[in-house]
Length: 88
Image (tube, rainbow, N blue to C red; front, side, top):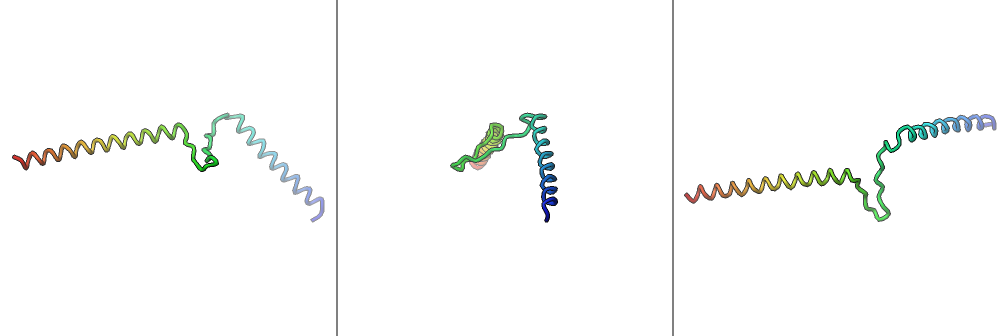
């Protein structure tokens, strides 16, 4: 390859990079804060959980506890009904 061909390829690459950089800069200015922050693990390996995710997890756990509590009350009533039926 001669020097002119290499320079032409480098100039083409530089133009493409300039277009990409401009597009990214324009995107950031057009919608500041539009992208969600990425949870990055800390140096100790712990994962960060967003407040929204923690709220969803808490809601789901409360629903599981409520279902479990409903199931226990049904079991107790079924057991007491069976015991009353056999006692009579």
